[in-house]
Amino acid sequence: MEQQLYVASESETDDMEALYSAIPPRISVPLRAHGNADQLLEIVLDLGRMPEARFLDAEVELSDAEITSEDLDYIVGRVGEFNDDNRAGIERTLHRISAIKNRQGRVVGITCRVGRAIFGTIKIIEDLITDGGNILLLGRPGIGKTTMLREVARVLADDALRRVIIVDTSNEIAGDGDIPHPSLGHARRMQVPQPHQQHRVMIEAVENHMPEVIIIDEIGTEAEAAAARTIAERGVQLIGTAHGNRLDNLVQNPTLADLVGGIQAVTLGDEEARRRRTRKTVLERKAPPTFNVVVEIRSRTEVAVHADVARTVDMMLRGAPPRPQARKISDEGAVEETEGDQESFGIIGAGRPAYQMDEERELDETREADYRRTSADVFAHGIGRGKLEETLYTLSLPFRVVDSLSSADVMLTTKQLYRRRTPAVRTAEENHVPVYVLRKNTPVQLEQALQAIAHSRGMAEDIESILEDTEESLQRVLAGDMDEVELRPQNAYIRRLQHQMAQEASLQSHSNGREPNRRVRVYRAREAVGAGR
Image 1 (cartoon, rainbow, N blue to C red):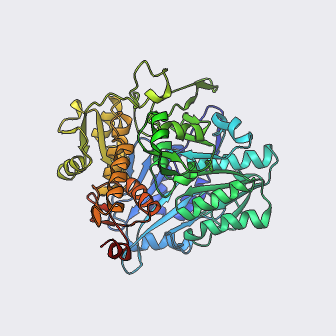
Image 2 (image 1 turned 135 degrees about the horizontal axis):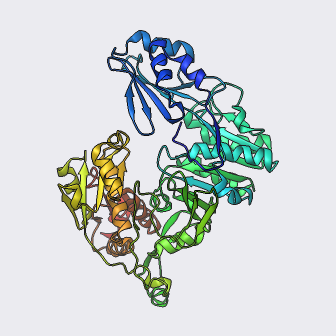
C-alpha cells in the first residue's frame, strides 16, 4: 500500500501479525524486535540479496544471510497464486504481496507492502465528497490516494447512507479474499478478473447493482475513461484516481484528457479570430468534464482543489495558469483554506511557487498568457547528460544542464533514486529545490518532465502557434502546392491534434520516426493526387 495522508484525528488498523506470519521467521523475528511498526512501508526480499525493511525515514537490513529460494517459497506457500499482475495478498488484510519473476516464471523477488486502513484521512475534502460531485484524486505514487478512496467509501456508505460500490481491480482498496476488509463499512466491492477488464466491470456495476456512488482506483486507459463518462452521464456519483500529479497532466494526456472534457483544435474564421484577438487555430474544450472537481494531493496534510474543472481547463487553454484553492490541516486539526493558491502541487518537494506570475495578473484573463520567458538550470541526478541535452535541443527549451546542485533551479531524477532518498535528493528538498521524478527513464518520460518544468516556469511552447503553422501546411497541400508535407517533431499530445486537423481537412496522415524525433506526415489521398494531376 501507500504512504498515508495523516491528519490529527486519525486512527488506523494494519493487521501486522498477519504479515509477520507470512514471512520466514528468520526475517520476521528481527523485524518484530526492531519495533517502529507504524512507520514500516514494505519488506523487500530479492534472491541472493540481504532482506531489507523500508521505513518512512530509513532502510534496515534484517539479516546477514542472503535470501534463498526456500525463503521465497515460504511466502508463496502462504499467500497462494499470483494474478496476471503478479500480485497476491493475505485474506482479510490490506497488505499487498508483489512478485518479480524470471523468464521461466519462477519467483525471484517479493515485495511485501504494508496496507493500513486509516480513519480520518478525508476530513480535508469531506465537504466535497458529501456534496455529490464527481471527484478525481491526483498525486504522486505513495502519497495516499488509495487510502483516501477507502475512507471515502466508508464515509459515504455508513455516514451518508448511500449505496456504494467499489470497482477493485487489484484488491488494493478492499484487500485480498472474497470478504472485503471491515474498514469499508457497508460499501460493496466488485473484483476485476483481469486488469484489462476494468472498464467492463465499471459498466456492469451500474447496470446490475443500482449504485448511487462508484469508486475506482487508477483510471488509466481510453476504455476506462469512456466508461467513467458513461457512469457520470447516468447520474451516478463517481470518485476515482488517475495517473498524473496535476490537472495539466491530464489536459496534455491524449489518453485521459476526456476525463476533464477533452481537447480539440478549432480553426476560426477571419472575423471571429479578429474578434477574439487570437490566432485562427485555437484549442478548445471538447465536452463537459467527467469529473467536475479535481483534487491534487500535495502532501500528507495539504491538497489543492480545482472546484470548477470546466472553467479551469478553459483558462489553461487560453494560457492562464490554474488557480486552485489550497487546503491544509493545521497542527490543531482544523482545515485551513486559501483561495487562489498558485503553487504547483505536482512537483515533489517543491517549496516555492512554480507558476511564476506577474503582480498584475488580476487584469483581464486574456493577458494571463504573457509570461516572462526565463531560462532554468537543471541538475540531472541519475539521468544521462547527453540524452538530456539532446531532448532539450529537440524541444527548443532554454534550459542549461549544470553539474552542481547548489546552482540548480530544479532537479531531475529517477523514481528509483528518489525512493532511495539519496543524499542529493535530501539536499534538494532541504534547500527547497523542486524535484521532478521520472517513473521510467525513457525519452518520452524525459520529454514530458521537461515540458512540465517549462510550463511551471512560464516557458511552455506556444501550442496554438504550432497548430497555426500546421493549418498553413494543410492549406498548401489542399491547394495543390505540394502532395505532402512533413511537420516538425512534436510530442504525442500535439501529434494527436495534428492528426485530428488532417482528418477534418479530409487529408491522410501518419507519424514517422522514433521519439524524440517522431513527427507527422500529411498527404492527400492517392486518388485525390491523381485527380489533381
